[in-house]
Image 1 (cartoon, rainbow, N blue to C red):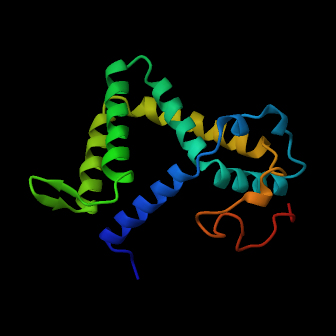
Image 2: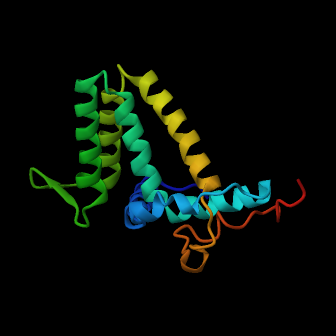
Length: 176
């Protein structure tokens, strides 16, 4: 059965809150002594899945920083994008009570649509810059996630998404 639009908005909000709640210290995230080459492709994919779970919020903030750096020659767009992200955070992810506008409760779905359209309009003139920044960010995130050893974090790894990222439906990757 397909998910309704209201269920999607609630799920999106919960996912955003779990991302914000999983931020770890930058000293732990950027520890150079934790970087090493993986021994195999299986080890690299395991490291990536565990590090993406553990440092998801840090990776999101890193991507945001890279997008902002990609807009360095477009200061107005950078300010607008910062304001849009602040609106997403304060109007959607960080509130528990319904948003009231002119005495009416604003539904989460309506707020997602309004914020989504605002984000789209904010990115119209700099879409290519943002796309390139996101591609570079994805490469940086994947490299860090594959190179950062996970021996020190396996014990306290709690997946906010269940076993979806840790277990593969096809089993172990050792067949490569």
